[in-house]
Length: 259
Image (tube, rainbow, N blue to C red):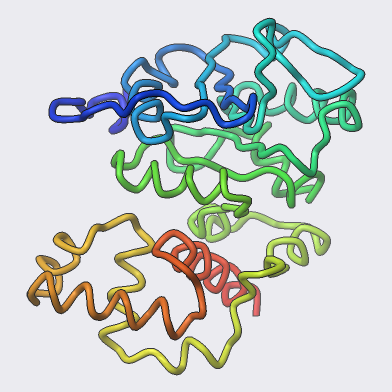
């Protein structure tokens, strides 16, 4: 149905599961959207956090005295719903906000076409809950998808620039939220100016999920040169790793599109 569901898993070695506290990642939607391939790939990439899939939000058992937990005690750390459940997600958050400890949870709406359906786009139009809900495209390659999901899981807020370039009228409140920088990854305007033209090209490719070998092939340089560029970019941005650099880039682009 989409690029993700067509990817195979040959050659993927699974690490021994390691439990991290009692957290879990929950997908809400049909198997056609969140396929077994997606679930197994995520389990391989993040072996210490269990992955749960349900068809409907109503299937998630609730414990109002603490956090949302499943019968085995797993607390949801990320709730990712298919776009058809967008309206339900808004009601779900509104009805159980305090019990779900929103500051500790990540929310995302997954969509398969170039833009989400009308209910999902209401989050952008109104600005309601926009700073809490990311948008996760499902029609991209598995590497880029995993990078995007990792950004969300690490606390980043993702709204693909393409969603803001469709002539959509976004409320002033929503525009302000999209332009707000993160607490510790604020894109400083002067920093981008310190990057060379080549470093900017490398950063753009890195932020799209490309590994050093792919970056080297695209720019026709050696893999060693690509690694050096990546190292310099990380140092100049003042971040700790590639994922943080990707978060920085996407937030910089979001700010730039609203200037």
